[in-house]
Image 1: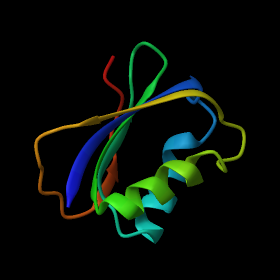
Image 2: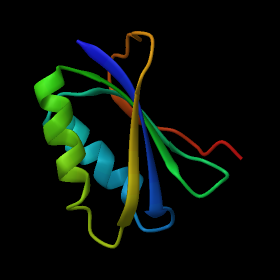
Image 3: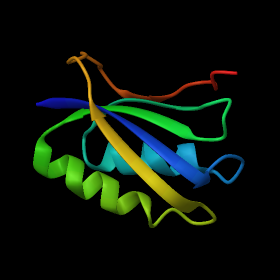
Image 4: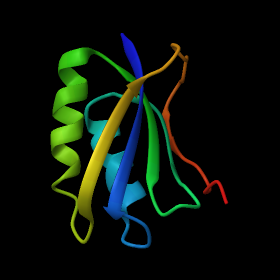
Length: 91
């Protein structure tokens, strides 16, 4: 298992992107959380297997109305989540 921070830039707020991310994460049995950031990006913390992570990131581009301009992945310390949650933004 790996835990990563995924920072996504583009038109990703106010377009239902977090809900789409949750649906994808739930379908792939990924645990973690997603939230809006004050700078306009979306931040995801995801715990999953490496091969599932690659599929997850590729599926983000299929979210309607979102326009992804940049995706950055950073491995972070392992975290234990019981589900994938949509959090309020960090403003």
